[in-house]
Image 1 (cartoon, rainbow, N blue to C red):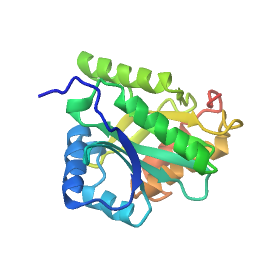
Image 2 (cartoon, rainbow, N blue to C red):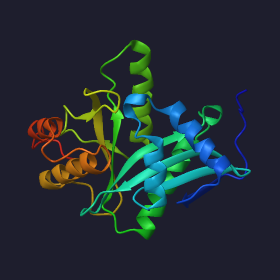
Image 3 (tube, rainbow, N blue to C red):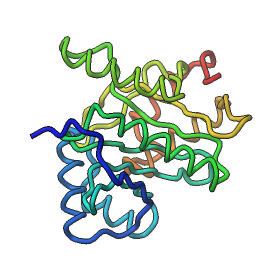
Image 4 (tube, rainbow, N blue to C red):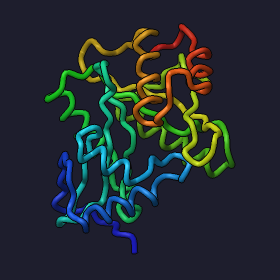
Length: 223
């Protein structure tokens, strides 16, 4: 049953360990929100969170997890990668996703020396009509919350976790510091390499990574 009321006791916390019940709730939201082709194995996420390689932010109501985000600090950069963000399906369309995103941005902006957040979303120019509409709304959500499309990566793809294929994505940027409206071409390449290494477990010689880097254009960096 869908809960149409605004949840009370909305709590955002950064965590490294979860009690078994909350870990089960995290697994439920995670597997319900993302297709197999886009999911890092859950055990790997939990292990990396426990070892502080990935940062977990949770949204809780009455000690129940109803949403989460996972942020991956990209090594040797001042950029963080927003890997996943999701709200339990019973609490969607209530503004919680926007609150979660803005709280994370505020926390990172205040407590960390971070230039900005980079992330991927499914492109809205492929797929069935219904899929395109869902993806278009997702794009509008991020644009409304201060992100912008990195136009210099028009052919960006992520590797599929399901097979050896790839998935067309839009690469997006949300600045944090006052002077972080732009990424240089070299900074963007470095971020993409780190995403492929740290999130997807690919080497710098990976053929898909090399294709993505080759197809970057000098025009259209975030501004």
